[in-house]
Amino acid sequence: MDKVLSARFGKIKPDSVEEYIAAGGYEGLKKTMAMEHVDAIEEIKKANLFGRGGAAYPTGIKWEQAYAIQRGPKYMVCNGDEGEPGTFKDRHILSEDPFELIEGMTIGAYIMGAREGYIYIRGEYTAIQKIVDSAIKNAEKAGYLGKNILGREGFDFTLKVVSGAGAYVCGENTALVESIEGKTGRPRQKPPYIKNCGLYQMPTILNNVETYSCIPWIIKDGGDTFSKKGTEFSGGTKLMCLSGNVQNRGVYEIPFGMTLRELIYDLGGGVTNGRKLKFVHLGGQSGSCFPESLLDTKICYYDLKKAGISLGSGAVVVVDDSHCAVDYLKNSMEFFEEESCGKCTPCREGTYRLVELVDKFTEGTATMEDFNKMKSLAQTMKTSSFCGLGQSAPVPLLTLIKYFEEEFLEHINGTCRTGVCKMR
Image 1 (tube, rainbow, N blue to C red):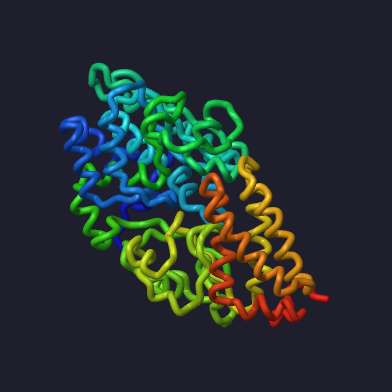
Image 2 (cartoon, rainbow, N blue to C red):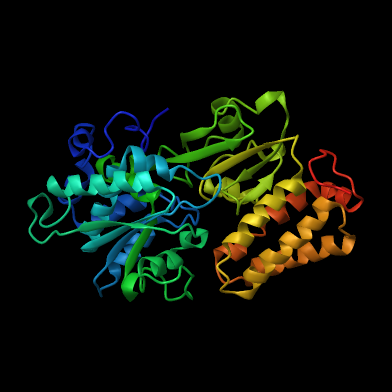
């Protein structure tokens, strides 16, 4: 299978500039420096590269809009927080090939005229932070970061690793920027948007680790070539995290257009212990849960959207038929209750109340009124929460009810078919 992002995984010393260059690294940066800035952006637009962090905004359009902003200084910021349960793809880039991220950000800095950049890495990735720090220092020594990069007068760019403190909400771009500034990580009102008013109230280009890491390949080999690796609507390849009740757990780089069934059964080896698949949780804890009937959907932003689901970060959690949908939901809701930043009432109070209601189902004390109240509260949170955390927290609840409503109704009668819940 043709690889873009993972081609060097396990084949080079992660912080060695020499080994990275010997394996084809920094060719993208050199090519960018020989191009007009707008031509480099045009290649990214041709690539049909959507943001890989979950929002799926077209990267070329984002960079074009940011380039058009005249005021400065501009900043390059990378979201390496990766706090979504079931998502562990960025850690492989950061720990096995951090230079493709560093090169991608440096290309962006050249295009935008940015002189400073920050890589925000979750606090739990302590060892990985040291690897990235070492890679940055070695890039500076070799002349690929710092002053007059590659001998180009006035092309100065420095990078710094910033450690998160374990707050999931800092995966939201404005909360991440607040955290870098030393403030409590809570989301800002939008507009103004990050590209206009981001870090220190200045224009900021903020992308995910995987998104930045695609840039060197796109510039080196061309946007059209990258786009053709995927589908008409989704260019390139995607790192997918496969976990749960599946034989071969891990990170897989796949071309867009592969089906979920092919990922789970051909690459993942199918469900463990000969059991049947019950549902898949796609896109992290804030993503949709759906049954086997949707597994033939292509992994493509357009096809998934047509099916009413979202790719999110690319996490795929496989759940077999030994699990109770209500019990699984309880774990998801407890995560959001813990991680709500408390800024807005719908999320702060809503996550707490949803856990209370789901608890009643797992204990066998829920009523039909509780069922209706739970659905109503979830819809309220989805439409009125301040940021993406509160808006997406009810998604697993609403989708599990959509496909497994009878299981929730059974719990009202004090019955759990799997025997997992602590019923009366």
